[in-house]
Amino acid sequence: MTSFREPSLQAPEEQPPEDRALRPQRMAEMVGQRAVYERLEIAIDAARKRGETLGHILLDGPPGLGKTTFATCIPRELGTTLQIASGAALAAPKDLLPYLTNAAEGSVLFIDEIHRMPIAVEEFLYPAMEDFRIDITLGDGVAARTINMPLRPFTLVGATTRAGLISAPMRDRFVIREHLDYYSPEELAEIVRRSAVKLQMPMDDVSADEIARRSRGTPRLANNRLRWIRDFSTSRAERAIDVGIVRSALEMQGIDELGLDGFDRKYLETIHRVFAGGPVGIEAIAHTMSSAADTLEDDVEPFLLRCELVIRTPRGRKITPKGEDHLGAAPPSGRQNTLF
Ligand code: ADP
Image 1 (cartoon, helix red, strand yellow):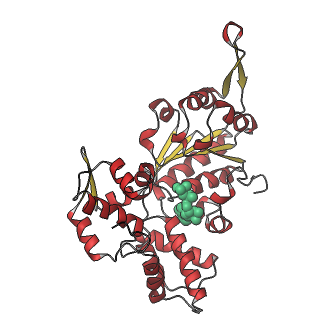
Image 2 (tube, helix red, strand yellow):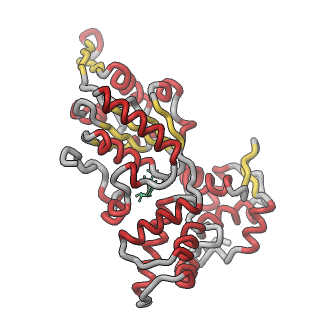
Image 3 (cartoon, helix red, strand yellow):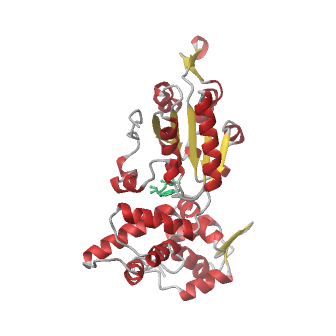
């Protein structure tokens, strides 16, 4: 699509070239998330047929499940332009101003990590979302006056890993709200097979299944594992990839049968050994691990909770018997985790 503007506002380190190479360019290339896909497709089709601006969309779910991919595909489907901003970088309303005034009619503004916008920025966005206008205050005190500035109608796509942190007034302004869930092993295996073709890696189905099984239901991790296996096989001068190579490569990275890495296991070990199985608050776990509570809550816990290796109680996190069994069965969490 010639009118599509590349997401140049995104920091380059967030978008390594290979990531872009593996990211589906059109919604039809996306694997899984069928219910979300179908609802979005209908909304996009209707907006296109009526020549109207697509309603604002909120996507939530754990990291690496395809929120950015949907957000970058939607404008392509609409034949319009895309701007990308990050909630964490929007510290004041003035930071949002260029995005709003640059937005072409019917274009898409994607705000990643939208829960990180301060309340002042959020409130500035309300009239922009609802009436496509912004209120700008000029001057101070008695001389202050507010001017109304009309905007061209646009579609806001917000992404968040923390739906619970989005305020009710903000949430209500999104017409479409979709939750992305973990992928099935079959869907992940399909993503691995497609990525292997793009990376020109000859691979059998058993190997693709093995990578899928150890990717924690997450396409981003499946692609990361695949790239590591490619490095591993290149370095060892292997000609074709088989399941033995996949296992050796992943074991070298400390990725176990369930797809947990050393950091995930360190989290389990912290609850198990340091806090005698819990219950323990997230802050205490984070301090002990020299990590941030946010990182643990966003990146580590969702999958462990889903696998029932830990549970959340009103008094804190507790390891389950299944979690204890897993620690017993898994290899040690690696040399980088010498804390224990
Ligand atoms: P999020 O924004 O939710 O953190 P991304 O959209 O950046 O996740 O997805 C991470 C990577 O996973 C993408 O670069 C893409 O390669 C891959 N990916 C995500 N969703 C899909 C999908 N449905 N089909 C194929 N690949 C996907």
